[in-house]
Image (cartoon, rainbow over all chains, first blue to last red; front, side):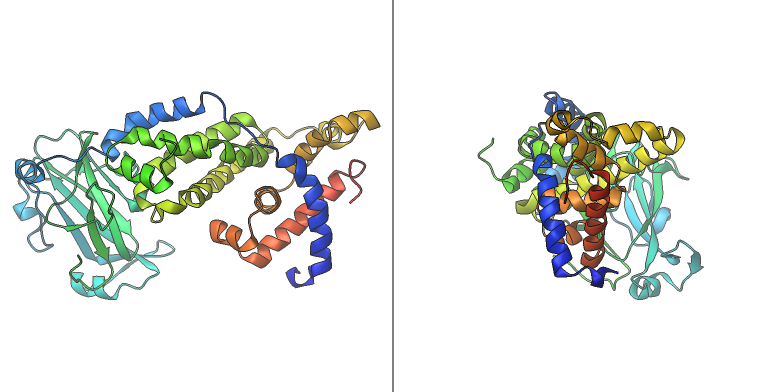
Length: 208
Length: 183
């Protein structure tokens, strides 16, 4: 049908549309309170999403005792440690029909682009009252992905289905403290706040 | 603040100066309001949709990979948010359908003088009666004056499909505005 929409018909429609659109092009103004209402919400959420950079990250990290674990060491070393663990062997098709895969490394290296892979994020902080995960996969929305208490005291975990490729993420502790994994690959974003990077479904390789 | 580029404002926000986001809000709120009001036919819904869209943009600011083209990125979010609200409106109308005579009254012109005064109102009401995907395509093409390629990149809809939507929108508007316009 679209191929029958020839140039003359397009031109006739364009002329008609132009007359109709003339009044619709009149400028509109946002409500006078629009900016204030929006910025009130921004100021509520902003500090957790975009914290002012700490002057001494190194000591802060030691205080937080945040480390990255390999899948093999896993929760056995969990006390006082945060980690992300890519769970190979679980893949979900694009239509979300579960099917099994091979071993962890093999599954990550060969995951087709139309599958998602379940990735387990673990964070350990006995002093935390809540732990949330934010990343490009949930549009950096605080509260969209909450970690649950899991097993050993202070261990928080959540599994997230991620599409193959590069993802950036960070944890938010107690609703306000931004925590990126210091031993993971850093975000290549130049805007300041550090995030961590995980690659899903691609062969492990170093990234700078 | 207003002298800073989009990229500079975004960099400031990501570095922790979240008040810099207000510079982006001020810069784009009116443009986005025009599209949202025309798309949703309701200032209240448009305001809600834009509050939600700007918050999504704020939360996802880190994923704006081309800060110099923040406007296009934001617009994409606004279009998507308006789709969500349009869908809610459709559900609402399914539950509470407007009476047929009210529709007729809404688009049919009265006296010539009245029609003259209220052509804009007739057009807006006729526009609101188009299927939302046609309304969206018409607004992006003829009111926001984007190219089909730009709209396709923004919406994920193919150019031929967009052209067909615009054509159907024009056909629908011709029918609805018969007596107001003879196009």
